[in-house]
Length: 347
Ligand code: ATP
Ligand code: MG
Ligand code: FE
Image (cartoon, rainbow, N blue to C red; front, side):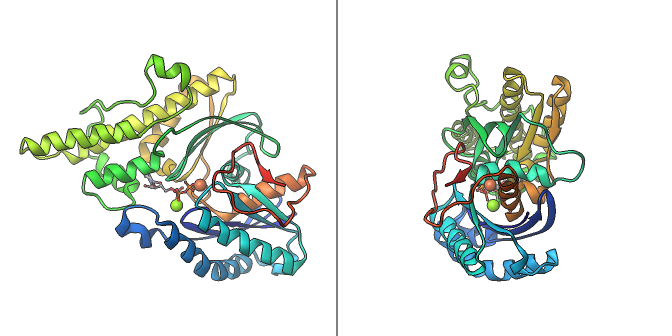
């Protein structure tokens, strides 16, 4: 099926078009720059930006795919989880488009959409199931057991406080680096010593591992970095930004990959899929290769344009649902900012 997907859950306005598992176009526009001076995504600003970006993005995606919008078989849209106001803009637009074209609509889960990105990655065969998926972004840090992308996804664990990307952004701020902090820390860390400071690995003590084996926590790490930096400043010493960045990045990468590989081993699933904007991180990618190689686990990291929020992954997930024989959503669904990952599609 020819499916057009709309994604507006955070700060990316994404429109993507797929034919089955084939990617035809993937237009993304981000309001990231408008949030820079606030040091994080401002929901109202994001919602307004979606409203302005959707029209041009739709035209661009349709042109790039070389189709007429009336050719599509279905409209797909992210209905959650994400920022309420931002989601509502996409949901409203998708309903209007589906109604005006007389086509069915599929309201799908954003997190499962990230897993759907793998299908569009044409560098080799897509993953067999089951697979473990680790999704790390500015809003999420989630570990999933995907038995079937269209019908059976289990949330093994997630962050109990900050998301990993959020931690990168906050630590960058502590170090006086601009937003978004992820790329800045990555750059600074390249010159630093990752073993210079031993920062805590959240929820990794034996007592935590009993209850939170697959959960993450990054707020303690952020506080530890803040305290360490403060002490240096109070002592009148120069803060070794590169060493702090490298040591912080190492702590995040270590805990992410330790828990992901644990999940693969515990469930006997020798496949790990990474998604979300934070997988742009050089050390996370490097450590992912190292650890999965050592454990005999196959690793997939889709190209970054499919890892960050985009409409094509939403379209791909809906296309899989259609091919598996699922019914479309009824038009009375709304945006659900806390949509659980088990709800792959809203009825
Ligand atoms: P959502 O949580 O809804 O998926 P988001 O817009 O918050 O979406 P993404 O756009 O996927 O998340 O990713 C943005 C986050 O990724 C930011 O927090 C940014 O700092 C972080 N990031 C980007 N590049 C890097 C990097 N090289 N290293 C670490 N973090 C990075
Ligand atoms: Mg984003
Ligand atoms: Fe996302």
